[in-house]
Image (cartoon, rainbow, N blue to C red; front, side):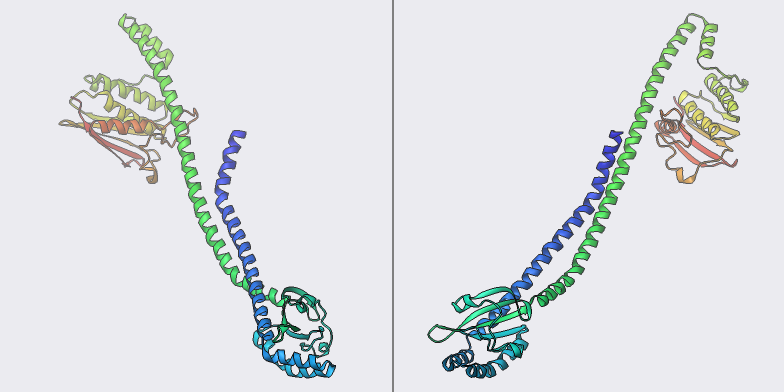
Length: 417
């Protein structure tokens, strides 16, 4: 059982492997592309908020307002800075698509904020590093929610930190941008999956056809091997029996030879055809065929018009064709043979079921048979022998329909000299 399962499992693995490779490749590629796309969106967003923050921190308007608020040192000074800088922050928010622009003084008190109530209040996140002169880029949660934000220090002409500038975009918007990018990528991934699956299916179909051809060739090879083995055994046995018969006949023991032959293969005797007295081999063959076909329920008719003695190759052709008709279920088989100069023309007609035209091209192939093979050693050798015998004598053989409703084989071959 294991010998049968292993090739089947290997065959399934080979057939499914291309599709599996496509699925894994497309899935892995899509995952990598999604990760790269997400990283690209986040990187681009981070660069955008940093650029906006750095640009605003360098504006003289921002610096001047913070310096004046610091000089006054009162809430009124911060309110005047707010009235000057908030319109600028609103314009920048709309123009750059950021969520907020928050400017604080050196104490961390908001000068600008999208929500009016938050202005003049301390920032909700830690700004100590920025007030110490460092820049910050990262995600923090403030009054508007989780945002990716850039914080930069605002410096005066003496490079002293006089405030901070924070620009941010909601993480929810970044996720939406990422999802939109992935939606645009999805059709390409699906297209690659469909094309890859189609290509792998075609490859699997080609491999399956190849497997079937190999299976068929293996079965044919095994059948031919069994046939060859059986033929060798039969040939050896037949050669031994011929030596026995030769020994009996050569010593004049004719009665014993006939008894030995009848013991090996019972011979059905038929009527004698005295018109073929000059053709002993042909007469014996026809008598044997009449007896053999009679046992199959068929009658043999003959029409012979030859001058030279008919040799065994011609009789091999005639015997196989007549026997084929009887085994196919015919009740009447007619064999005709005529000589014209150095050519022999013969035909075998029957009233059997005939031969399917779709099988006509294969009928002379070795191993072809429409009859069951209970022995398992192979059938379908007779017509191949007929084809080769006719070809060896520079002849031809054709298959057609008989007027009697069955098959008709017509052949022509040279007379042996």
